[in-house]
Image (cartoon, rainbow, N blue to C red; front, top):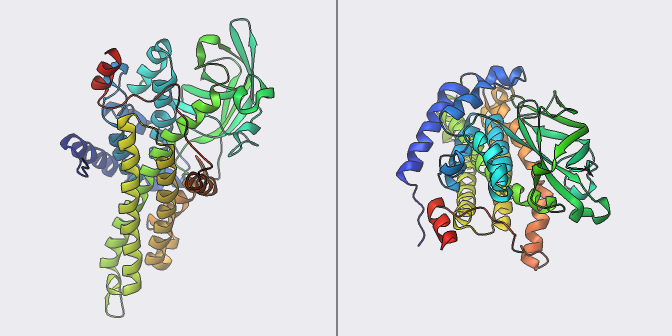
Amino acid sequence: MMNFSFSEEQEMLRKMVRSFVDKEIIPNIGEWDANQHFERNIMKRMADLDLMGVCIPEEYGGSGMDYNSLAIVCEELERGDTAYRTAVSVHTGLNSMTLLQWGNEEQKQKYLVPQAKGEKVGAFGLTEPNAGSDVAALQTTAVKDGDDYILNGSKTWISLCDVADNFLVFAYTDKSKKHHGISCFIVERTMPGFSSKAIKGKLGIRAGNTGELFFDNVRVPKENLVGQEGEGFKIAMAALDNGRFTVAAGACGTIMACLEESVKYCHERRTFGKEIGKHQLVQQMIAKMEAGLQMSRLLVFKAGWLKNKGARNTRETSLAKWQACDFALQAANDAVQIHGAYGYSNEYPVERFLRNAKAPVIYEGTREIHTIMQGEYVLGYREDKPLSKMLPAWPYEASKQEIIH
């Protein structure tokens, strides 16, 4: 049975996050963006509101809500600014949900529980200077040494690089096996030999903390190996399913913000004796924003519905990420156009929307990668094979009972 309505709990969640964004992010984001400042206190406040583990089961410290509730949180946060949606995407989508899916019970108790409660912050280390879309080109290595692994290498464009306590890091344990020789490790910031450095001068998401990670003979205990040796590539791709889902949801928030600001300006600005909203070409831009928002939301919440069922959703999530991010970039571009010369200055927030909207078209799978993926699915060249571990279906307690019986 198809149901397009939100539950009362989801509506309350949206209202709460929107209020939080209106009070704590929007009044300050212009200054934070201009100063390239990441306000860490926002994450503490989100933890106070139980938003850092919104879709993590209660038994692991989370709120126990469904995966579409995570989408709602990301949509509303990005309406304020992409930086804080990114923080939740990385902490919850890429790290915590990966531990929920692939971690063993000891790892979940040690790392997932405090992250879901917001007591610790998690991040994700896959991209390297010469390894983006081509994951097999990564150079970071992990060499077994007794009961430990010795990590050497670096990562770049890592969100929360200076903020996170724990990182999921991907490294070669056997380079001769290419994709099948990559493994995943939990690395703590306090481990000797670890360091990080922020990247400044970004086009957009300037209020976010993004940068490099360095591993100089970092000794990681074997207990911090996630999954099995050689499973790292599968784990990374599964993690990206979750990350891309949150990015797509956030893109809906960008479109929402563009619509709100543009509609407001359309009623304020007058040309040729009437509101600019009365001009048909302006109406066309507003209409495209609305169409993009509604189509993107349908794609996002369909992917979330599949997650709730415990089903593979790589194809659907890829499509949602590709289309929503493209729609968001177009909406931001049109929002600037509607504002005219004022849209080109930071007197109005739409110039920030445009700068921020470019990055999601690149990260977590470029537009081009997702285009190829969708073509291969349709042509029958790509097929999603069963994974050894899946995210738990929601409701979690019902899913747990099914496993028991």
